Length: 251
Image (cartoon, rainbow, N blue to C red; front, side):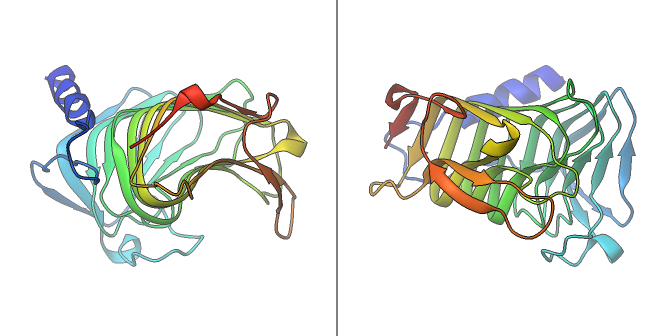
């Protein structure tokens, strides 16, 4: 059943060229208020495409840096078939290697998901799903390791992915974007810290409604452990931001 749900969602993800700009989200099967963080053990949690939203301490809907998440995933956990409604608090936290399959954010709170952990070999995989209304970041990468985002759509956003620019402990981080559809308005797809050896790889990126090409593909920063990081460049360079013009489609 889970396979059928994911297949249907991925089919909806393919937006025909004649369709007006705007992401297509699934209709939730029900509602589930969440007042305390749902802790997902190694293994997984299937939300059955219900809408989960914060109440009580998780219900402010603000951009505060100290909000708890709706879901906290243990190392090795998978979260699938979930719609996060508003307020979404701090979305999803991964404490190590994790997989998010067919997860949708209708109105991103502080961040959609944050990748934590301590191992350089850990991976966070996002397959399917989408996010809307992210005034700042969708995916925040605080720990080391590699994040892969594939078959994903983002609509009305600040940054799709940001390698933490000023975490107290910094790491080399990697991100891979495959088959992404980004709907304008948006600021940039990726922000990385070149001084820590970050890399970002892009393939099959489609940007919709940005005829002036204002959405930056890959911004480069000088990361710090305190204060504010400095932007030092943007665009493909063959070392940190890895893509060619053929990897991008505008419509």
